[in-house]
Image (cartoon, rainbow, N blue to C red; front, side, top):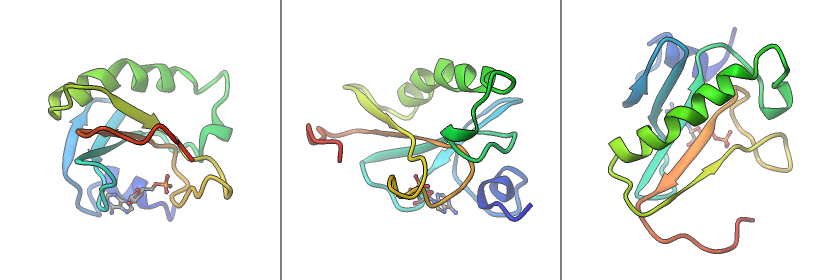
Length: 112
Ligand code: AMP
C-alpha cells in the first residue's frame, strides 16, 4: 500500500519515535506547529476518522488511553490539544488516521 505512515511504521521512512507498542506508533511531526508536535497513529491502516467502525474502534480508545502518557513523556506540562483532520475541508494530507498532539506553549483560543 502506498501510504506514507504505513512506510514509517515499517521503518522504510525514518521518523523520531515518541512511543510504540504492539498496536500504536507515535512520532514527532516533521513540520512542527507547536514546540511539541507528535503524531499518534494506529499500526493498522485506517483512512481517517471516517473509517472508524465498531470493528476497529478499540484502537482509538487505546490511542486515547496512551495520549496523556505520550504528552507527559514528551515534556508537556501545562495542557495540550489533540486534533484529527478528516477530509478535504479539514486539510487532511496523509490518509492514515492520526491524532496530532500539540503542546508546549499557550495556543490561540480559536481552533479554525
Ligand atoms: P494532516 O495534514 O492532518 O494529514 O497531518 C499530516 C502531518 O504529517 C503533517 O503535520 C505533516 O507535517 C506530517 N508529516 C508528513 N510527512 C511526515 C514525515 N515523513 N514524518 C513526520 N511527519 C510527517
